[in-house]
Length: 268
Image 1 (cartoon, rainbow, N blue to C red):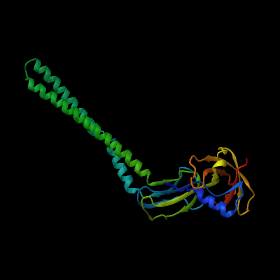
Image 2: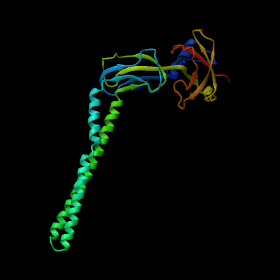
Image 3: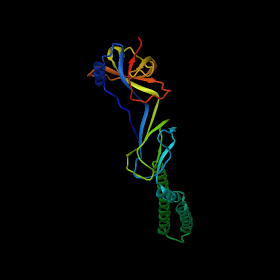
Image 4: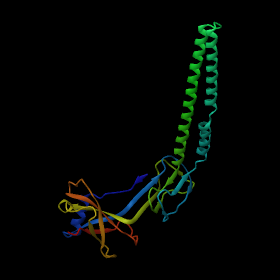
């Protein structure tokens, strides 16, 4: 998943200001989505299902697309059977218990002089070997469990789910087509609210605080000025233009398209 967020350097906005003959109070900027994500599968495969179309409203966690996973499901069933199998562990436990019984009997026989010390030591070694066999059986089962859990994770990666609430803006692939690893598949955006990145001269930016208001004027004149709020102020200035990035959030109930030119004023 790659987030399509782009910042226009303050130097470029400074040029816009110079060309547009901006006044001392307002600053040119461009609207953009408040959330904008382009999604891709992390592995290659055939797209077996597309559950949305362009323009659909989606919620965070909603399934958007799915790769063909029939082979992976069969492998998962096999790994689950291996992970749940206790036969080897139970067999190793039974063999260990038998060797412990044999050792106890040989110790009694040795006390009566019926067997040699070598027989006892040999039985003791058998017990040790069976203990190791049991440990190995338990380890192999734990590894089988891990392989099963890993396979479950890999299966989830064949599903493409929206990480945000938003609207499907573009679908770049069709159902039945092969998707390459990290190839763009679906773009989801949220344009209510809008975000506006403003390159504010340092002297004015120092006086601004998150939560403060901003007056936004649309250059095309199609809508009267609206009031937004400051939601972020950058920490690093643009050395070329001596500006600081300030993010303004603006409600967009009418769902104006993003990319419009605006002028932003920060009331004193």
